[in-house]
Image (cartoon, rainbow, N blue to C red; front, side):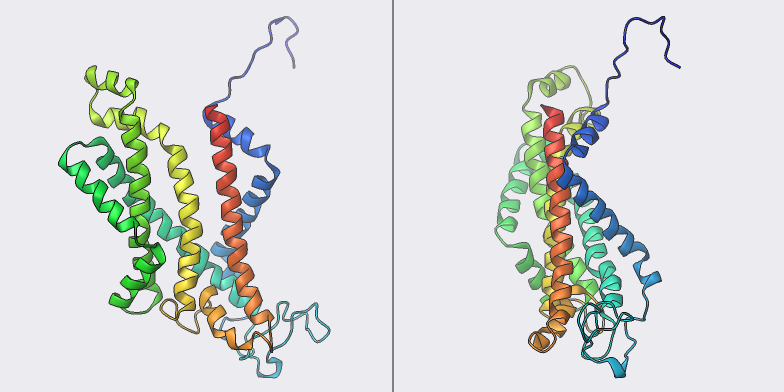
Length: 297
């Protein structure tokens, strides 16, 4: 019950996290992206447990069956079947773990390793910092997809080798982004004052550096997640990543490319899945960046 004896209204001061969430919620596109991102995560986690058919089940009496909304479609195969009679819906849902799930895993590993090296490099000085800076310039001049293809060509084709290659290709951008953010932060007066005050580097990193590079890390993570989804799909499409019959979206796209005129849904649906996941990731990332920017302002 409201206390009428208190004539002074109490203003609740929101924490930085609550302010960011309040700003994020005011963006309808970002909220739509967040719900779709949550749906993708749910499909990635439990999708293979609820699919109607096995990913390798071949229904010989229903080859190249159109999606259910077409005149020749069948509701039992909602998104149709491929040239071997396999249910496309089941394969797309199971493939979310191979494409989107593996992209998340790869980005998290690259984030931890890259940001740790970037923070150490940004807080150091002299030869160590200079060598790291020029080494990163060299690595970043090579596109991540090309670097991944080179590593896969050395290690051999396969999904596991692809994930190793893409992880190695995505670590340098994290190092560079973190290095630049930390290096710029270390030049600020409050950091210099803390160092002159005798604060140890670990305390400066925990209380001063990390809270102020969150925006950089979030921005880089969402950009890199989009790149990881595209890289895994592209390497799979080239036949160097996941091998048939694995239902990785890029590999599904490659397997069905010959059917584009005969059964266009077999090519369109995996492509739409890749497009949807990249679009949702970008919407969430842009919403978080704008919310963080509003919070800082």
